[in-house]
Each structure stands twice: as structure tokens, then as C-alpha cells.
Image 1 (cartoon, rainbow, N blue to C red):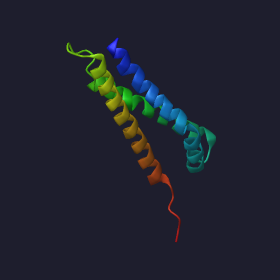
Image 2: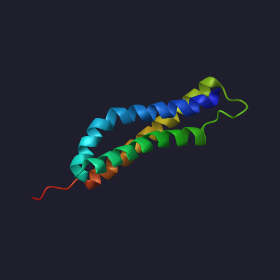
Image 3: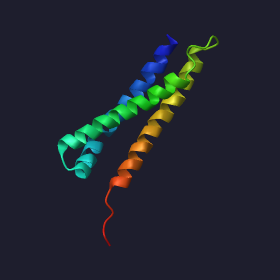
Image 4: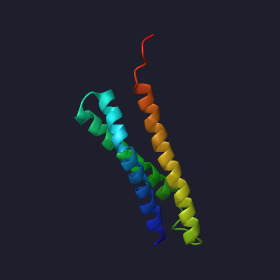
Length: 106
């Protein structure tokens, strides 16, 4: 049962961020990429990134399989790792988009 925390919480967190950012991200990527299919591709890549990072951290570094694992401890660790994964995914995406925005010529 504890493994369910480590799978469901990161997935829900990543999907929530994806839904929250999808519209504005698509508009920004449409402007940067030039075509809707290109922008849609990168929006989908971002969705995978936002769901995979938290899941990988929670499953990889979680301790639901430990003999002394408690529901509260697993939940806390999962929330911390999920948050770190979401933040890492958003930072990585924002960094790469920021580098792609053309600077105005002075």
C-alpha cells in the first residue's frame, strides 16, 4: 500500500503542473517554434518531463519497502521528492526556453 503513495502522488503532482502550464506553454512554444505541430510536440515532452522527474525521484529514493517504513514517513518523503522533481522539471524547462528567446537588437 505504501508504494501507492510513491507512485500516485508524484504522478498527480506532475500532471497538475502540466495542466496548469499547458496553455501558456503552448502559446510560448508556438511563438518560438513557428508551427503548431512543433509546439505540441514540445508541450508533450514537457508533460513527460513534469511527470517523470517526480516519479523517478520518489520511486528511486523513497523508502516504502523498508521494514520500518510508516505511512507518515513515506508520505512525507514522497511529498518532498515530488516537490523537488516538479521544481527541477520546471527549472530545466524554463532555463532552456529562456535561452531560446531571441534577444532584441539594440
